Amino acid sequence: MENQFQRTEILIGKENLEKLKQSKIGIFGIGGVGSYVAEALVRAGIVKFILIDNDKIDITNINRQIHATHKTIGNYKVEEMQKRMQEINPNAEIKIIKEFVTENNIEEIINEKIDYIVDAIDTVKSKIEIIKLANKLNIKVISSMGTACKLDPCKLQVTDIYKTKNCPLAKVMRKELRKENIKNLKVIYSEEEPIKAINENTKNILGSTPFVPSAAGLIIASQIIRDIINTDNSISIID
Image (cartoon, rainbow, N blue to C red; front, side, top):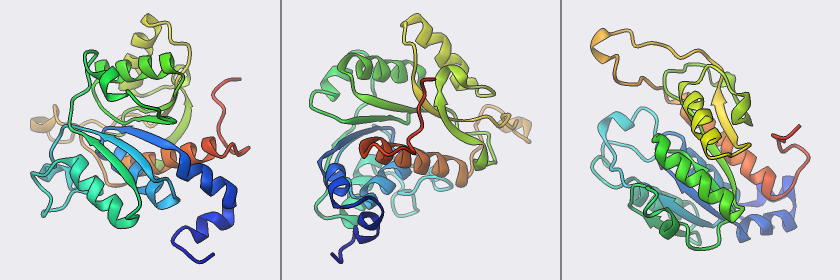
């Protein structure tokens, strides 16, 4: 039994570990939240991934993104994450896509069977396109709301988008989702009041921490694992 997934198998059993191995996860956005989702899922035993992000690692990413170091600055996030994940599990099957999501390319990006989609990007229009297609194709999806301007990871929770509060991104998303007649969406968000920039010169730059985005990513990974193996601990978003 002794292997790199032994401790996971002790908790969930061999059959459920096999379920994880057979599941394919699409992660949109490999930044502060998405990089930790990918890290936790590959360590848990999932081997099939699609990583979508067109950004390169910047020095300002180092404070919160797991693949960001002084050695990786200037490299594509998906490439560095793919490399890291395959060092964790050489058997991982990881497809990378360096594109910015739009209504024109979303159906080309999701053109194969995916069991779960993680929306960990910042752009509202792109988030809506991802969620619309997930609904159309009946793919499970969890969407990350804003983790910037927050200091307390204990305020994070998984709920339905229409039950969120104190999150500017969630407010905009609720409005746009109503226009698309989307009735529910599983999200992770923080109910902590956003913290304003201390320095007036940086008020247009969103402050962030190492521990709130990462905690959000780990919670998303936990939710996905529990949804896949159908544990009673999965959080229902429908009353």
